[in-house]
Image 1 (cartoon, rainbow, N blue to C red):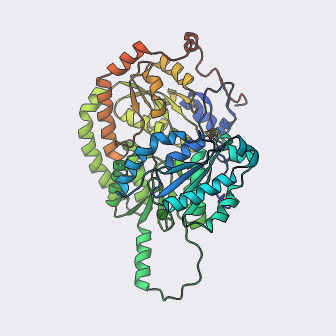
Image 2: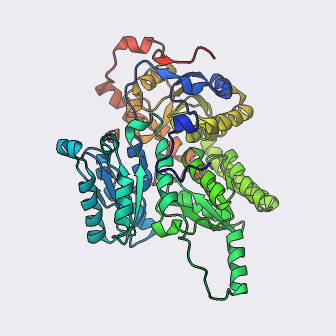
Image 3: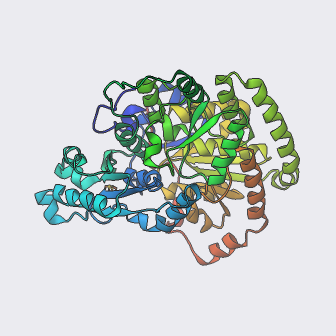
Length: 507
Ligand code: SF4
């Protein structure tokens, strides 16, 4: 893969043939995905759509010592208001001196649409550098400047000579893609082009200290980059670092909550380890093609089976399988003892899951290991990475072949129909869509949270403990449903939930 010379990354519809509309069983989607035509699916009606600028912010608002400039009308990125305090708190968990979120909007209006918005962007960049003296200024390009033809890259090239901060252009215009996860590629594209790597310098006349050089090479040979996601907690990170340190590995955490300088020598690593393929494939593929750093991209360490796979894959790379297996055996033994009372309570309870494809498939495995039944899944999109994980899930838990799967970003009307049909004991979903389920009287459990454990062995225990608590007292959702209703007519609930999905009949 090599798109780094291009100013903008490709969209995922083209790069991965990602699917954004599907309704059927897990077995059906797996078969159709293997035929390679899922990307042809479409909707005859779409209730809502995700914007990649919004998702890009989920990573970028974590970057320390930076200023974000949203080059757009004032509404784009307005959701940052909700993130300001949160972002600062979580940044401070990594660095007590962190400033938190600092952002500027260029506030494009009708006049700018006629005259161009470059002058507003110029003054915003100069202001950000002068006022805040940040290490990086991140410029997020939105739909309007892209449509009116602002040449932000030439402007940034010119201004880079005048400001101290490194300027990172991120082309995350919402209109370009219906696969919101393209945002991750847009963010990594900007980081790879501007923050990773050191400028070529003149040959250094200083004689190299051979001992120091050997020490450095050894350090690199034991260093892994663990690519975190903004939806995980600091304690999730610490738990995974602890597991890898017990294999005598040095761990560098990127990209969320990192300082811009942390990316510079990130290619000095023996291995890139992804936590989520949806998040990282663009970055690790480029780090391999440009710097020769190999990578592991198979699964996310959620649930016992997937944490074991994640850890063993890394250990295998370093020839430490035996050591890792001993660690796994001892962790799993202790965990199983601790889980016993929760398994007893959760046995036979049913769940419906909604969120990113990687998280929901691995969470399905986690819930199954606690004795629960997963009735259905709703993924934002589906691609080759989901296909691989689903294949493993169906091989390990054959009954999951029959579970229903719905693909679509947003589309809460489809979710409402499915939940009224399947009536699960709990909906485990993305916090952005959980309110809909709650209003149907279904208890909800957030699929992630930056304030609690979800990953690794500790995460399994915490999910079991918190799920038990959620299901022991369901009065909130039961009371809520008495006073509110969703805005759909009753006859929608009797219709096929996938009535507006147009699947490729050639399949
Ligand atoms: S879709 Fe375009 S206009 Fe709408 S929020 Fe996203 S970038 Fe802004």
